Structures are given as C-alpha cells and as structure tokens.
Image (cartoon, rainbow, N blue to C red; front, side, top):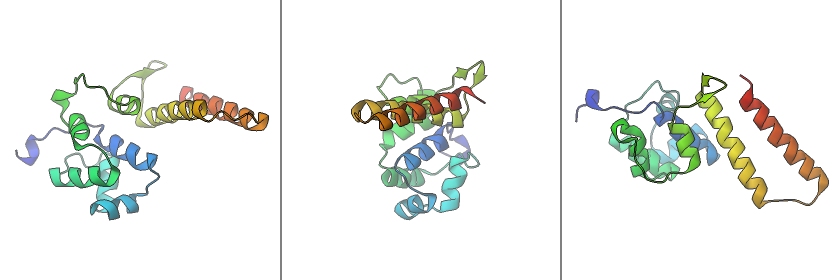
Amino acid sequence: MKKGDRKISSEFGDIIKLYRTRQGLSLREVSELSNVSESYIFRLESQEKRMPSYKVMESLCKALKIDLADLLDVINEADSKSTLLKPIDFIIMTNDFTLNGKKATSKKKEEIVELIEFIFDSNSNINSETKSTFEDIYRLLRLAVDIKND
C-alpha cells in the first residue's frame, strides 16, 4: 500500500494523546519508550501528521500499552462501524457528537472522559470524611461546568 493510499482517522492523534496523558507520560517519555521522535509524536497528536508507518504505530502501541488491533480500528475509517465492545473513553474520543448544538471538540471530549473517570474513581473511593466529600462534589461540579461552557 502506498503512503498516499492510507486513510487515517482524524482521531488517531487524539487516541495517542489520551493514552499518553492517562498514563501520566510526557512526550519525551513516550519518545524514549517508543524510539519515535518527540516532535513526530507531537505532530501526530496535533494532527499535523496523519499517516504514520506501521512500524511507528507498532512502536507507539508498545510504549503506550495499546492493543494494535484497536488502534488499527481507529485508523481504518471503513471499518469504524465495528460492533466490538470498546471502552467508553475510546468511544467518546473516536466519535463525533454535539454539545449544546455544537460539534464536540477534542478538548471537550477529553473533559468528558475526565468527568467519567472521576465519577468512577469517586464511586470506588468513597471517603467518609466530610471535607473530602465536599472537595469531591466541588471537583465534580467544576468538571461539569467546564464541559458545559465553551
């Protein structure tokens, strides 16, 4: 397959960034783990570069502990209607939807993923201390307001 024939989803960079930030890794750390230059990873995440080689994808997947098959599903737009179960964050980042009548941006998608993760973390880490509970409620409300506001 020639480079010009490859069709790569615009969400590819978003997925790389999501997994990188979720693991608390900097661009430099992913670069060291994957042997892919820091600037190239940045250009992928910012969608300046959209056609990485298979070798680059494989290296990034290994560094970020992503199943290459899942990443290839994102890249292959023709196969994006797959009925396989996917994690909610993956679904949010790879699908278009609207918020208040406007198409959700990558930033809004990231905020929604953060909100969902916070809710799930809060349910598993219920703290009986009143101060902590109020802090959790405040953070939850702050995340919701951030998503609502443009």
